[in-house]
Length: 155
Image (cartoon, rainbow, N blue to C red; front, top):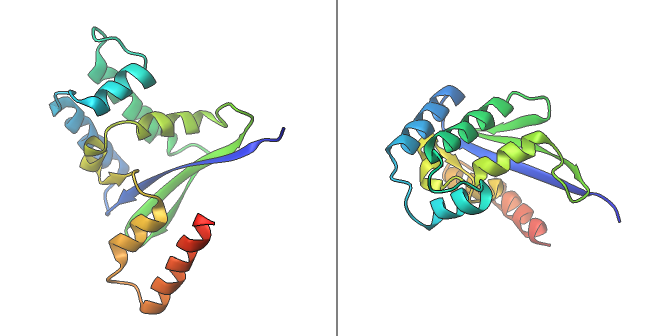
């Protein structure tokens, strides 16, 4: 059996430094009451934390490690207008291809309303997010080309 290629991404929207994004996300975590199903999934299933653990500190650590890994050699980025897509990945034989993919995954499972404080969207694929965000700025010809990519992606 062969290896699979795994790619993880994170879409940053708007012109904001990574330090400012991280600061806003950490502030959102500190203000949040951490109730609800999305937090329960993250805390219990992904991080394996108990109710008595200091959950906010652990989630803040995940955010800090994610932003730190954006400077690693196995993470790159693509910038389109004011959207930056950070990418990492590699070959996997059933395990994680790199430490950076682990950091992306742990950050991914933080609830969307927290990540949106830093203008980060991980719930859409980058192509759909790009089309939705910039459809008014793109020519009709470009929209046709981008939509054809969407069709080929589904195949």
